[in-house]
Image (tube, rainbow, N blue to C red):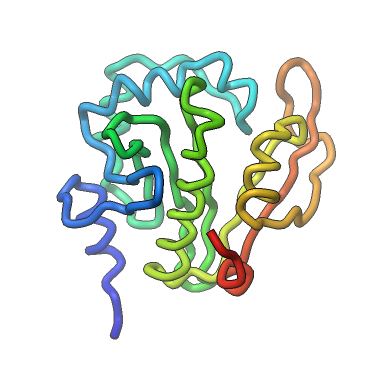
Length: 196
């Protein structure tokens, strides 16, 4: 049976709650307009900026609202809000750059500082892997992490079974210096051997 991924994505992105991704500690759902304030805080967080690849410029609430409005433009990028089981928004997760020919995608998570260390990130990553590998039939997920972000490297490699696949030396200029970028990934076969 062929799955119409564009239709699946449009339903997920447009906020039609025909499905949520349910983990043990978190629920991943489509981004809604009322999530704009949380996402704006996340994007404009100087503390979080230190830990993530790339650099951000401060966004206004108007810009954040327009970003949310434009999310339905592409089915190759899925961006989700992460809620705990009490319905509190705790973070953001994505599957982006989805390549349905090579069955691969890029994945990442961001969590508000007060919700780190609660097990939400691990559960979100496992929930994303379940969805990516068993619903979207992807074969590979990958990501990049700044080499000094040891907690994120540990989350993915120690807690979630991902592998370090290489290091790009001096690849990212951040905090006044060039930093190494750790490339991580996991395949569907590797995921199938994990227990959570």
